[in-house]
Image (cartoon, rainbow, N blue to C red; front, side):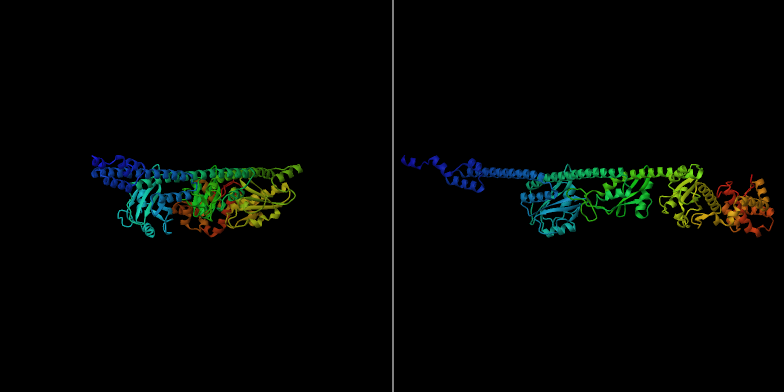
Length: 638
C-alpha cells in the first residue's frame, strides 16, 4: 500500500513539469520549435504518443495559420501606411521613387522598377536596387517582354527565369537591360485606374524565383495604390496647368485689351506677346512668300481660323469678317510630354519651360490683333474718304472765298502755298493706289478717285516723275506744277487727257510707258487735239470712206479686219485666229477690200495702219468707243 502510494504521481506535479498547454503556447505565439519541444516533453512524461503527435500537428497548423494572419495584418498595415504616404507626395517624380522603394522592401526582392506608357512605347522611369545605367530611361515596344504582356492584358504575370522563358516576346533592348541587371525571376503587375493601364510595376530577383499568390496579391495591392496616386498626380498637374493657363490667358487678354484700347498696332501687340514667351514670335502680312505664305494662302482658301504648321513654325492666321490680314508666326516651339504627369509643358528654343504656352498666346492674340486691324483700317478708310471728298471738291468747283478755299486745300492734306503736280491714272484705281503707297511720298499728298480715274496731287518738290518708274508702273498723265485752285483743275484736265491718250495709243503697265506729260506725246498730241481730230476724221473719210459705207450697208467688220490684218503682219492665218473666224472668211473680206480700195492698197499698208490707230485713239478720247473695244475702230460721226 505504501509502495502504491509512492508510485502514483501527483497530476499537478506533472503539469508543472510539462509547462503550459497547447492553447497557452498558441496564445503566446509559440513557434514550431517550441511546439515540438512541448510534444517531446509530453511523450517523455508518459502521454500517449499517437495522440500527442496529432495534437502537435494540429497546434503547428494553427500556429502557422496565425503566423500567416499576423504577417498579412502587418502587410496590410504597411500597405495602408504606404497608401497614405503616397497620397501625401506632391512631386510625381518623388512618388515613383517611393513606390519602387516600398515594393522592394515589402517583397524582399533585389530590384523593383516602374515602366509607364508613353505614346506607343513603355518607358522605364525609375528603379530601386539597380546596379547599372542601362535600365532607367530605356523605351520598349508595348508588346516586348513581360512588361509588354502585363501592359497589354492588364493582368499580373511572372516568370521564374526571364532569359529562358520562351513564352515571352524577347526584344534586344529589353534583354540587354535584363542581362545588365542579371534579372532572372520577374513579377509584373499592372498600374491601372478604372480599367485604363498607366504602366507596370515590376519586382525582380537575380536568381531563379517562383512567385506565389501571396506575393502577387501583395504587389498587386501596392500597384493599385500606386496607380491611384499616379492618376491623382496627373490630375493635379493637369489642374495646375489649366489654372496657370487660365491665369495666363486672363493676364494676356487684359494686357492685349489695354494695348488695343491704347491704339496699339500689330507690331506693339506682337511685342507684348513676345514678352510672355521665349519662343520667337513675329508678324507676317498677307500675302507672303515661302512656307508661311503658302500656309496663309491655304488658310485664306479654307477659311479655317486654327493654327497650321509650316515647316518648323506654327502659323496662326489673323482674320476678321472673312478678310485675312496676316499671321502670327512662332518659330520652333517644342513641347516634351512629361512621362509622369502626362502634361506637355511649353518650352522655348533653349528647352527650358516657357512662362506661357506659345500656341495659347497666338490663339488669344489673333482675334484682338484682327480687331485692331479692322478698327485701324476703318479709321484709315474714313480719313481717306474725307480727304478724297476734299480732293474731289478741289478738282470740281471754284471757291471765291480765299480762306474757305485754303481750308479745302488743308482738308485734302495739302499746303495751298506750295506748287503741286497732278497725276491721273487710267485703269484700276486700287492698283494705282497701291503703287502710289509704295513710292514713299509721305503724308502731304492727296489722292482720290474722280470720274473713275485715280488722281494724285503731290508737292512738286517730291519729284513724283522720278519716283514713278516705268517698268510695271501704271500708265499715267502728269501736269503741273500749279499753285492755285484754277490751275489745279486745269492740270487735272490736261493730265486726264494725256492718260487717256496714252491708253488709246496702246500704252500698258510694263510696256515702258510710265508717267508722261502732254508734251511727251509729240505729234500725237497735235493729231489727238480737238482740231487734229477733225482733220483726222476728214482724212479717214477720204481714204476709207468706201470701206465705211460698205461696212454700214452689209454689217461686215471690214475696218476691224483691215486693222487686225495689218497688225498681224498681213498674215491671213494669224488674222483669222485673232478675229476667231475661219481663214476663208478673212480671204473673202480681203477680196472685198481689194475691190473697195484698189489692188495697190497693200503698198500703202503702213500709212493705213497709222491712220486706223490714230482714228481709234481719237474716238476713244472723245468717248465714242470704249478703250480697246473689240468693235470697229472707225466710223462716221453722227
